[in-house]
Image (tube, rainbow, N blue to C red; front, side, top):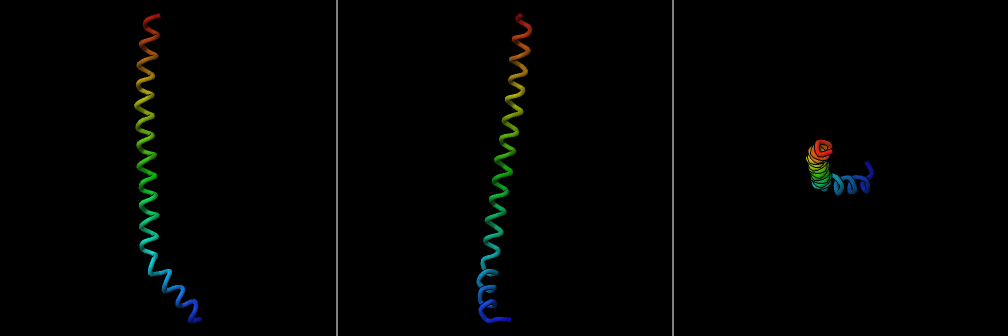
Length: 59
C-alpha cells in the first residue's frame, strides 16, 4: 500500500467513531423533534375536533 494512503487512512479511521457518534446524535435529535411535532399535531387535532363539536351543537 502507498505510504501516503496509509497515513491518510490512519488519520481518517481514528476520527471515525466521533463522526459516527455525531451523526447518530443528529439523527436521534431529528427523530425526537419529529416525534414532538407529531404529538403536538395530534393534540391540536383533538382540540379542533372538540371546538367543532361545540360549535355544531350551538347552532
